[in-house]
Structure formats: C-alpha cells, structure tokens
Amino acid sequence: MESSDRASNDMGRTQIDKEHEEPSRGAEQSATISAVTTGDSAAEPPVAVRGTLSTAEEASDQDLPTQAGATDSLPEVDLSAVSEQALGKLCEQIGAKLGSVSERDCSAQNLAMTNGWSVQGRPIAFKLFSARGTDAGSLGRVLLIGGIHGDEYSSVSICFRWMEFLERDKTNAFEWLVVPLANPDGLLRKKSQRQNARGVDLNRNFPSRDWDRLALAQWRKRYAQNPRRYPGAHAASEPEVVWLQQQIENFQPDVVIAIHAPYDLLDYDGPPTAPKKVGALSLRQLGVFPGSLGGYAGLDLAIPVVTIELPHAGIMPSQSDIRSMWLDLVEWVHKQVTGFPAVALTPER
Image 1 (cartoon, rainbow, N blue to C red):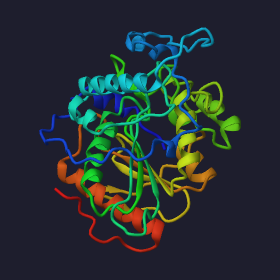
Image 2: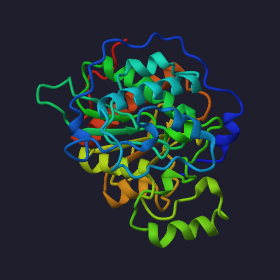
Image 3: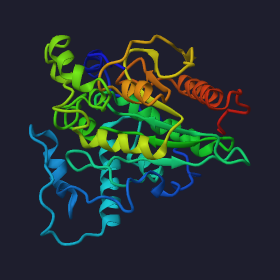
Image 4: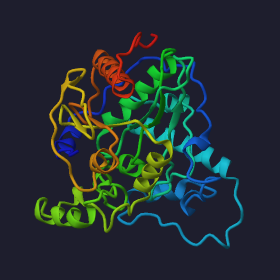
C-alpha cells in the first residue's frame, strides 16, 4: 500500500485538533505479554536506553542514528525498570507531539513492550485486548498497526481512540494486538518524517518474496531514488520491521489492519473478501509494492490486510467518522473470520 507525498504537505496545514473527550478509565491491563514475545525473555535493549533515555532523545534529529554496541562489559540492568521508564518517556513525547493524544491519554492505556526497540532506542509499544463478548473465548485475532509512516499523525491518534472503544466494549469477541506507533523515531523527530531513523521506508522493508528481485530496482527506476521510499539495503534490515514480522509470526492474526494517510480510501491485499467500505472510505485497491506489509502479509502469508487511508495526515476525522469506521471494521472482521454478521457492535459510551 502506497502513501502519498501529500502527507508532507498535509502536515504543514495544521496539527491534529485537540479533542476534549476524557480518556477512558476502565481499561483492563494488557493480557499476558508472553503471548507476543519472541523468546523466553525480553531481548536486551539498545545501549541508547540503558540507565537514561536522554541519549536516544538527543539523537532524534541527527543524521546518523544511535547504534547499539557491545554489551558484554555492561553491568546487568533491571529490564522491567528500563521498559517502564522507556514507555513513560514515549508517552511524554507522544503527548508533546500530537494535538489529539495527550500524555495522559497515552499513559492511561498502560502500554506494554517486550523486545521491540527502534533504531534510536525508543520502545515499540503495544496493548493486547482479550475477548469479552463470548463464552467460547476469542473468535479470532486482529493485529492493528498505526504510525508505520512517521509523518502520518492521524494514523497514530486514531489508534488511541479505537483502543478506548475496545476498553469499553463488553461485546468484543476478538483478541486485538494494537501497535499504535510502529515507527516512533519517524514521528518523534523535531520534524517528523515518513522513514525511520536510518532513512528507510518501513512499508518497503518487509521481506516479501519479490523484495530481492524488485524492491531496489523499482526504487531506482520508478521513484528515481526518492529517499522517502528507500526500501533499505536488504529485506527486514530495520529493527521495527523485524519486530512486526515477529508479532505476525507469533500472534498469528486472522486479519491485519494498517492505518495510513492521506489517500482518503480503503485498500486491501490478500484472500477474499475485501470490505467495500469503512465509514466514508470506499474500496479502491492500489496494487502491491515490493516490501510492503500488504505484499508480505496479504499475498505471501495469505492474511487479509485492510489498509485504512485517512483523508488527512494532520487532521483527525470527526468523532462520528471515527466511530462509523470502527463499527464497519469490526463488523467486517466478524464476518470475515466467522462467516456470520456481528451482533450488538456499538461500543459503550
């Protein structure tokens, strides 16, 4: 799925309008983190986050990212304390960056992390929501990802709104793994950018089967080596992509939902059947690009991938549009996974 250069222009118009809705408080703590780990314990964090997070923060606008170094001579650290500090700093930075998500909104979600660290040592945070609406347990698994492109603010903000819906929804029949910000370095730079800290477009770096044959060749020929679409030196070269790949492997989602902006449409990759509309967004499939999430998960792994292209990168949809998109998505997921329409979908207000 392609995201347009219109994102950069859109960002210059206005930051996302501040919403005054009080954050939800009845959230259940994330379910067992081990459900999405890649081993028996969390991996060592990069040197940039050990002891202090200031190194990663100061490096955010440098041309060269902070690199993890040798760790054999370093003293042991309390990984849970490091994770807690890193998540707190992440929420602080998100609240300072986004007009529609305050630090309090972010902290209220009690985000978790395992071994996911960006190039510059920021955590790739997530929340796992368990099914509550069926005695039979979860009917399926859904992976929801925002912020793959760092200059698409609205894709991050809407994830937090939808997490609030999930917290209040006693009819939720699915297990949701929500990653609101997959590219923290791209968003949290002084000037946000599409790519990660190493200048790689994460949505061209997934290890699709056609990556070696097409990714760099298409970047050179079709995009004239546009740095915004650089796919990386090799497939899955970036830690953010490696982590997402691990979550897909371990969580085994029945559906993946990726949020982008600002094409104002609905895209789809994978086995039938695509949703025809989500809220005011209509289906208009744009094709598959080497190294894209749609190509990797949708075509190679045969997992349905729905791509929500919001109308604006820097302006949130209205509250009614946010809700109608969510209800349409949940209804489609239910029918896609179970073969039957959903009942009683409206989130509690």
